[in-house]
Structure formats: C-alpha cells, structure tokens
Image (cartoon, rainbow, N blue to C red; front, side):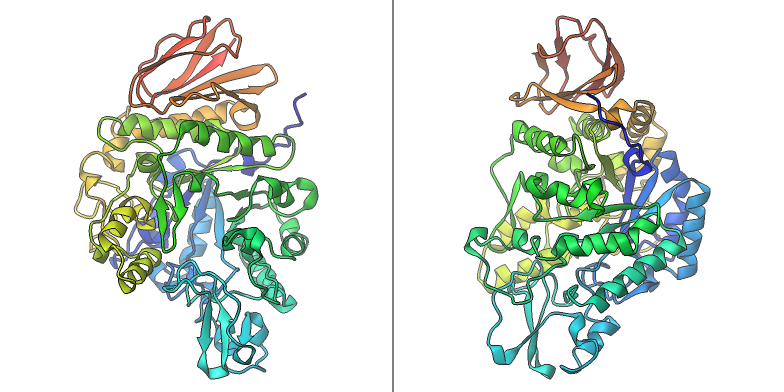
Length: 564
C-alpha cells in the first residue's frame, strides 16, 4: 500500500550548492563574493533548481575556508557586507529561490570572542564554553583530529596550563554543548538568521556535538575508529530535540545534518518525523566505497563494484520507505568531482557519464544536491605540486608525511584524485584566462580544461551539452512526481554493468536504466512486466525497449521509460 505522500517543498526541491570563494569574483581580489552570486542568480534560476545551499560566508580567519567562524552574525570582508547579504536574499526571493546556510556549531574559530575569553583564565565566565582538560590531571585521553599535523585533538595552552579539545584544526576548538548557555547562544544565532528570512540550515558535523565530558579512553568496541565514537555522544538527540523545540519548530525551514559516523541502524533516530529532530541528513557510506582512512591520509581502496554502489543506495532507500526522508549527493566541497570519481572523465566518455550521473541523482528518492559546476561536468584538476594546493587537510598531511620521512610522491598522486581542492577550483564560466571567474589571479588555480568545452558559455549555446541535459532532466523530475515520491525497486541486482530500477507511484511506473560500462551492453529484464515502454529522456540515441525486456545501452547511457 502506497504511504501518504506528505508533500514538502524541501522534498520536491533540487538543491544547488555554492562554494562562495570559487563561484564568481566581482571585487577583483581573486576570491568569489556575494555580489558575484547575485550577478549569477538568473543563471541559477535558469537551471531549474529551487534551493541554494551556501557554504559559510561568516566572519572567519579562514584556517578551514570559513568553517572556523569568529563571528556568527557578520559577513567575511572578502565576501562583502551584511548589506550585500541582504541584497542577495531579497534577489533570491524575487526569483522564488530559497536559501539554506551552513550552521557550524560543533566548533568555532579560536579567534571568536568566546574562545578569546575562555583561554584567559580558568575562572573566566566563558571558560565553560569549550572543553578544557587541566594539565595537573596528566595527559588527556587520546582523541583523534581530522586536520592536526599530529592527528592529536588536544592542544596545550600554556597561559592556563590546560589542554583544549579540537576535533578538527587547532584553530577550531570544540564548543561545549553540555553548557546550557552555549546552547542558548546557538539557538539565538539561528533565530537571528531565520528572522532575516533564510530558509534552513545545513548543519556541519552535527553528529559530533555531544561529548562524554569524563573523556574515557576509546572503548574497544569501536576498534580504534574515532568517527563513530564521536557520533555517539550521550546527549546528541536531547540537544537536537531541544533545538527543534526552541527554534526549528517555529519556522517553515529545511534542515539537513552532516552526520559522519551515523549508519543505517540509527538513521531514523534523526529524521523520523515523530522525533522532531531534523528533516534529513548526509550519510557517508558511499564516500567510503572507494577510499579509506589510512594512518595519515585518505587512501584509495580496491576498485569499487557497481553492485556495492547499488547496495548502498538501495539499503538507504529502504530505511526511509515508510518514515523520514533521505538526501542524495555524489560530491560536495569535501569530496572530488562527481564525473571523475563515479563516472569517466576521458574525452570519449565524459559527456555520457556526466549526464548519466545527473540522471541517477534526479531519478532517485531523496532530495538531490548538486555542487556548483556539476551541471557542466567539471572534473578533478589533479594538481602536480603541493604548492598548488590550498586545502588545510592536504597541506597538513603533506607535512606529517614529510616529518615522518614518508613517500611524498605517492601522497601527491593520491591527492590528484582525493584532495578536496579538486572540488574547489573556480567555476568555469567561459574560455577567458581565468574562466570568467575573476579578472585577477584566483585564490586557487582554474582547471585548464575550461578552454575545452567545460564552461557555461560554450554549453549554453549547445542544445546537446551537459548543461542543457541537466536542465531537461530537472524538468523531468518536476514533471513526474513518481520520481520524487514513488517507491523504489532495484532490478538486475547483481549486474556489474547496469544499474536498473523502477519508480512506482499509484498507477504510474517508470523504468530507469543506467550504464556504468565503457562498452555497449545488451541486457534482459525479466523482473518487470509491461506492454509498452515510452521514452521519457535519454542522453544518447536509444533503441526501442521491446516487451520481451531486451534492451541495449551505449557506454554510460542513461534512459528513463514510462511503462504501460
């Protein structure tokens, strides 16, 4: 029996993520800015998307490109002013676009006024805004840090003879949610932005906010893995429910949590509507399919199998079949480019694989998130030298390997596919020197392939481009509610070349066929009955799908059929 749809704008919307440093520079400083986003709003609206997720634009010393916030109620000077932000919001509302901002409250910057006070003395009123371990208790129990050169999440502070906790950079001290004053500060700043008129928050590493303040040693049951341990704090759901009651329930907004360490077994604890916590969250099972955390950096695993890719998405879809809601993404500011990672960015297969992956995201259940440049098939840049990288993660891991006498060449080869800077190169607007992003040297080098057709101007003028296919596919999703709300049924489960599934809503049935092969494939689907298959969209010339269930797909071809 089909469950009641429970239609919501954040379920039906398509999200477009903007990394502001890399989108459009109008001030001539080589860094993207808010006025640059305003200048491109008509382009964004023309994509057919509904929601912009804007990475942090708050005041920040930029140790982690804005994820280290020193003032939650002000705009970083490099990006503009609060007047610019207000203009952006007004211009978006004029175009019917919604704005989701980043909420980064697991940690602040060490330059935030709270931390500046906290470290002055042990009896400072702000001392308990952060996690401190007095040195007279000895060395604190091991805690792992993402960005620390020594992977140590404790930093000794001589002034008060104590250590503070930083699960990320040494300049990103963790806020102490166990202090009700801290939680109220956070709820107040959320209300500040909601009252301005924003439409939601993407909540950075929200699964880490609760800590066991006794700081026990890592339990053996975690087998040395700190991320799931960090995501299992004792008061996590108490805090999320309190946040919902205090703030979220008072506004018509969208919430999506970044939830590393959260598996299928705990998913509904966050998004079951009856629990009143979040609308959806990002899980990271797919992001671990082809990479794994090594001793010092993220490393490649054995080549991934399509059957594993299918299983991850099918298992997660099943979790939300009756309750809650999922999210769909293939890359963002923290992960390499979609077509380079999950498709094939060679000139032969780039177009089909880029559009096939767009078809996938837009035909699955769950709100689809696209990252700037994904609509034109932007690829990994694959820098050859450490001097070209700007990402704190890459640079600090390089230092660690250098200090330990490790293989720096092998590390750079790894980063060509794994570094976050692959996702952060400037948006490719045209063929000019800096791809139309800036009139001066950009903060991060532009991918040279912007002169080879991977730019907006060239693709906008070509009806058969990746960009124009994306626009058409967005329309297909909006015109077919079954692709949003319909049930999902995996077909050809064990096949390692084709991902096939149906979407069913009432009497409406759709068949999605996606080739992940570099060869032409011929398959038969015996698991589904139909008299006639009507083509809805395809990224390549297509053969008629006969009622004997035989079909042919060219390399990386995507086709959607309506079944009768």
